[in-house]
Amino acid sequence: MNIIIPLISGLIFGFGLMISGMTQPGKVIGFLDILGAWQWDLMGVMGSALVVNGIGYAIMKRREGPLLSGFQFPNFKIDLDRRLLGGAALFGLGWGLAGICPGPALVSLATLKVELLTFVGMMLAGMLLMNWLDSRG
Amino acid sequence: MTILDLNPVIGGALIGAASAVLYAFQGRIAGVSGILGGSLKGEALNWRLPFLIGLIVSAFVGSSISDLWGIDDPFVNTAPRNLMTLGIAGFIVGVGSRLGNGCTSGHGICGVARGSKRSISAVIVFMTTGVITAVVSQHVINALVTD
Image 1 (cartoon, rainbow over the protein chains, first blue to last red):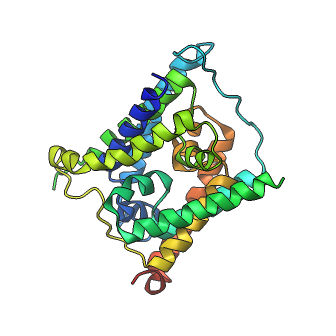
Image 2: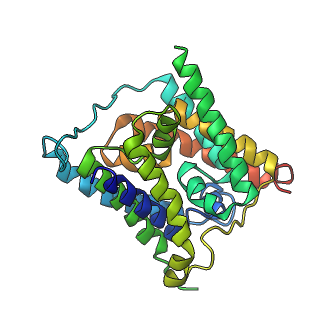
C-alpha cells in the first residue's frame, strides 16, 4: 500500500500532464510568450489542478494526520528568503527558455528524443550540483 | 478542432487529484523537483522511486491515451530549441528548482493550493522571469535558441 499510493499518484500525474498538453513545450511557451499568439492552456491546467488539490487540502486540514496510519503532515517553512526567491527566478528563466519543467521532462523521456535526454541530463547535473553544495554546508 | 478544448482543464484536474491523493493518504507533496532531487540524495526512495516510476511509465501508455482522447501527439513541440539551449535550460531548471525548493508542481500546484505565502511568492517570481525569458527567446534571440 505504501508503494502503491505514490505509484498510482505518479501514473495519474503523468496522464494529467499528457492530456492537458503540458508535455508540449510549444503550449508552455505559448502561454509564457505574452507577445505572441497567446495560448491559455497552462492557465486552465493550473486553475483546474488548484481547484481539485485545494478541495483535497481543505478536507485534510481538519484531520490530525493523513488517511494512512503511520504518516504525518509535513511541517512547512513559512518565511520568505533569498534562496526561495532567487531559486524561483532562476527556475523561471530556465523554464521560459525551453518551456520544459521537471514533470513533463520525465514523462517525455519515453520518447527517447535526444532533445529530452539532453534537457533531463543537464537538469540532473544541476540538481546534483545543488545537492552537493548543500551537503558542504 | 473543437471550439472549446477542455483537455487542459481535464488534465489539470487529474494532476490536482494525483497531488491530493498523495497528500491525503501519506502527507507527501507531489513536487517533482523535490522528489527527484531528494531521490538523487538517496533519501526516502521507498516512496519517491514509485512516484517517479509512475510518472515515467505513464508515457508508455501515452499512445493509448492519445487514441482514447483524440490527441495527436502528447509530445509534439511547436517551439523547438537547439541542443545547446536545451542543455542550458535544463541545467538552470535543475539548479533553480533545488535552490527555490520547488517548481511548477511543488509550489504552483501544491503550495498555492494550501495558501502558502512562500509558494505564492515563488510562483509570482518564476512566472515573471518565465514570461520575460519566453518573450526574449521567441522575439529577440530566437535565431540563437532554435536550430
